[in-house]
Image 1 (tube, protein in one colour):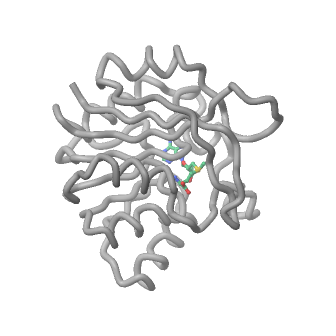
Image 2 (tube, rainbow, N blue to C red):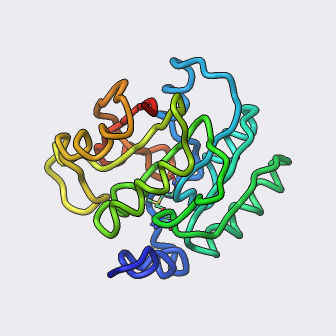
Length: 200
Ligand SMILES: C[S@@+](CC[C@H](N)C(=O)[O-])C[C@H]1O[C@@H](n2cnc3c(N)ncnc32)[C@H](O)[C@@H]1O
């Protein structure tokens, strides 16, 4: 079976700078959803946190944050960002398809661009991790590729019915709406789904 490392050559993408998603800007959709939901900042985890921009944003907002990614270069860069921002984040280099067996549940899970890759490699492993890191009432925001756009390239895309079929056994979907990722410079990126959920 392909692993997190081999499926999309994540190490190589970071080592060659082929990381168009890495805008260095906290996700607008994350900000909008949390502002609307008015959640009190408690515990949060980002699965596939990359270089940690969103973890640092959440920590600045008062969340107690854990960020996990399978690429050591990304995690090292994330550590540097947190240090220069003066915030504490717990970082982990791990495969989120096999993670969290001993974890305390988090109140909020964020995924920008990881689920849509993991589902093609080890969907069950990814959802076991979600079971491990959540409990009834935990919220999750998943931002993933949306096929309802004519374009080449961009992230893997997930049909709406597959998003629903995969998440609904574990989560109540509170909204499933289109949004646009942002690329470097805040430029409008590919069409995505914003999936806002509460653990059953
Ligand atoms: C599209 S990038 C998004 C990074 C970050 N969430 C952001 O918004 O900048 C997807 C990230 O997921 C990570 N990733 C992919 N599969 C993974 C896995 N199985 N375990 C851990 N991280 C994974 C990649 O290394 C990459 O950093």
